[in-house]
Amino acid sequence: MHAFRRMMGQGEPSISLNLLQEQKRKEVAEKVASGVYQFEEVGCLNCGSDNSELIAERDRYGLQYSVKLCKDCGLAYTSPRMTGEAYGQFYDDEYRPLYVGSERAGDAFFQEQKKQGQRIYQYLRSKGVDLSQSLNVLEVGCGAGGILATFKEQGHCVVGIDLGSEYVQYGSQTHGLDLRVAYLKDLSIDFVPDLIIYSHVMEHILDPLAEMAEIQRRCGENTLVYMEVPGLKNIHKAYQMDVMKYYQNAHSVHFTLGSLSVMMSKCGFALSAGDEYVHAIYKLGNEVSSAKNEYDTTRQYLISTENKRWQYPFTTVAIKQFLKRLLKPVLG
Ligand SMILES: [Zn+2]
Image 1: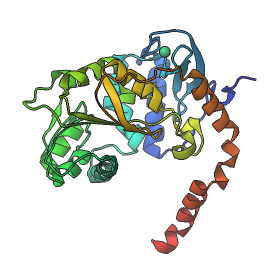
Image 2 (image 1 turned 45 degrees about the vertical axis):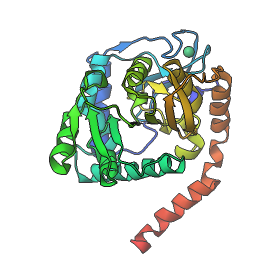
Image 3 (image 1 turned 60 degrees about the vertical axis):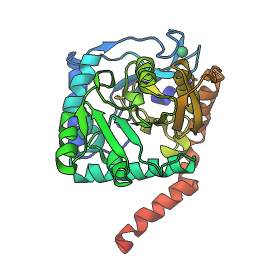
Image 4 (image 1 turned 180 degrees about the vertical axis):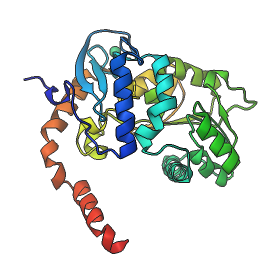
């Protein structure tokens, strides 16, 4: 039997959607079916190989989505995938409403980002990063800038870039943050960042090695790069043991700590701290990551998580969530 049979073919969404999400999902599906959104075949985004295994054919919204696991290095990546042009339109028209479930940049989204900023701050501190001095912080893919707002409140100097002009405008005008609509390669700043943040951004980038090389050019000797991506080996903790809640059509790569570190290492970075969530801190360094092929371990992980999926309702995480839902009307 095919190891990934459940992930093959067309199907219904694997998560519950509100009316707006349902409508946006239909719009995307129609644009895909009518050829408005074009697709392109790509090789492995790390090693270029075409020697791969197909592990999914749709995403959590039930949208057409082809995920491959490279047999030569173990990176999971999307191919065929929407072209850069199609993604450009998708980010403008459907991405936020489909993913967030609301149409406009607003306070609720900003507050969520601020909480995320607090989590990042705590993580960095727990890994011994000295946050007592004022740091120059650059965030790429900052959205409305909520993460940076947390850092600014703690006395740091912050600059953020994003391609979503509405969010950038909201964060600049409503919260007085220095946010700009720009790609990293086009950004002009007069300082070397002490800290560069990529929170749930690298998995969206179509050419991650080129982006990492650009980060390398922006780094000084002591610059820290904080990178957070959804971990493909964290399905058992963050996605109810269901990989079909993890796949999202906007993601072009599906990292593990190992595959992310191998690619960062190619661009001159050494891992300082990290886990399979994935949270990771990198800095420039020659220490070559042990570039082992993760194909077998990732494949085994996915198969074993799938086989154990029925156990999820009995896990501590699930029971806690169930009780929280049950008690919510009582506790308010
Ligand atoms: Zn590869």
